Every structure is written in structure tokens, then in C-alpha cells.
Length: 133
Image (cartoon, rainbow, N blue to C red):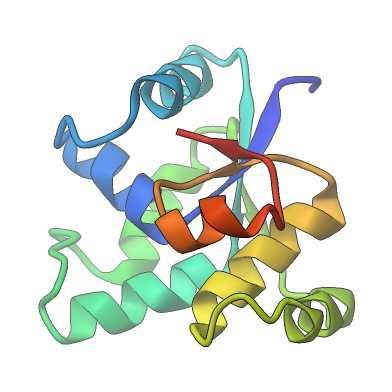
């Protein structure tokens, strides 16, 4: 599918919560996914970060992490993206952030040669990936 992107953790959580916190381009992209007109890749690092955030009650998925992602991935527009050795190497080469999740998520977008849906100012300012927000 030509219209594809990778998501950062907060963007996915904002979409799932229907919080209205997504930027206009990000919201439009998620809408295209819901309509089956775009694909969104969810890096394994996003799944793990959601798990950790839910564990300490920073986010409420309203079900188990597995059930949340099973529901999400029941829509073929949303695809899990396994962590690869190449992503780890690419993350190591990104020196703009000390956040290991940001590095792995950016590396996932870079290795897929896709834009990243994020509002993260550090990522946006780094130029490491093309950003949709």
C-alpha cells in the first residue's frame, strides 16, 4: 500500500483514546487507516512501551496489553512490526536522544523508509525521519 507510516507510542495511544490530541495530519492519517486507505506499522518497541506505561498506570488500555493489540491488529490496516537486528543497529547510530524507545521507533521508520507519526519535538528536530503530525 502506497500510503503507509510507522507510529510512535503517544500517537497510537491518543488515537485509541479518541483524545483529540493528534495533530491534523496525524488524525487524517489514522482516519485513512480506519477507512482501509492506509497502513500503519506498529513497532515492537511501541507495544513494549505501552506495556510498561500500562503497568505503572500512566495509560489505561481498558484491557490487557495482548487484548488491546489483538483488537488493533484485527484491522488489517494496522500491522505489527517485529524488532530486527538492523533496527537495533540503526537505533545505535541515532545519537539525538537518550530515550531507547525513541531510538528504536525512529529506527523502525528509517529501516522501513516510511514517515513516523509523532509530535515528539526532539525527533522532529533531529531530522532523523520524516514526520507526520
